[in-house]
Length: 207
Image (cartoon, rainbow, N blue to C red; front, side, top):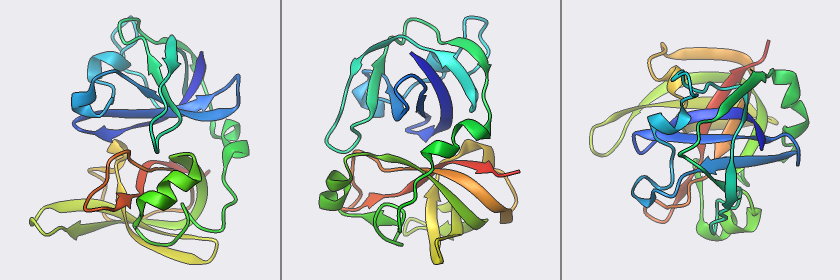
């Protein structure tokens, strides 16, 4: 299956890899069978045969064993992790435009999270959005840990302190990232205190 890679985001010290199934024109998530890391892909699993790592916007050929839908993450595809991905070509942002959502809100509201009923009702856990005035901010949680998050505007609404797992921005300076950007937003399969948090798993600065 040919996949245009959209995310290589942080998940359980491994990678959440989502992309576009170019043949069937759908958003998918590539997963392993390792439940200990919530089916994420390890560093070894994202290497090409030449040992170079897969990158976002790479178009790759990957062997899919079967669809592995979960209650919320219905897009999951189990891949053969013993067979390296094959690099085909470099994609571009023009290829993702048709997948941009036109929803009134990002996963139903302007909050940082949704509840389980809402999460199930969507029938998907990955969406693409075009947002404005995206900024990198820092917050401190109840355990005293500092986390990078993002603020942005979407369809006239303000979104603040949205969780961010895009590794490319973990060490970036705080402040404005872009006036306009495409973002991939993902919902996890597991909750935190009953909340299913929205994660900005990739930020594409629109040129």
